[in-house]
Length: 137
Image (tube, rainbow, N blue to C red; front, side, top):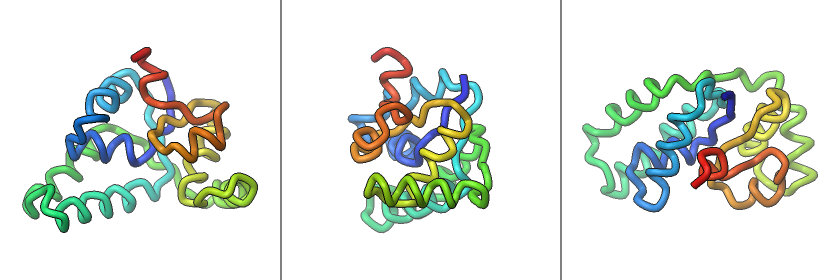
């Protein structure tokens, strides 16, 4: 199955965020073709940096976690062709254009966006899904 994976799904898995880890892992195991707009890598790098800065991860563990993320096999899709549609969705829904890049990719790929982002789940109920909705949890 193909799905767009929001950065928060990967971030919660890599940081071991108790409330979301099992749900994230289960959905990533079920998705055979994971996609994300290319900026997800920069977003995840920032998430890991913030975790190191907050003392959640030791500094030496940051690069290790980024390496684990690369091994998830998420295909990074260039944002160039997504920007205009993402901007229009952001304006209409009142959510960040960074976030609507994921929505736009999912819409164009005719697949769900798996996310924990409550604003996206509310604004795009036909596209955005909680990971547990995919795995039946």
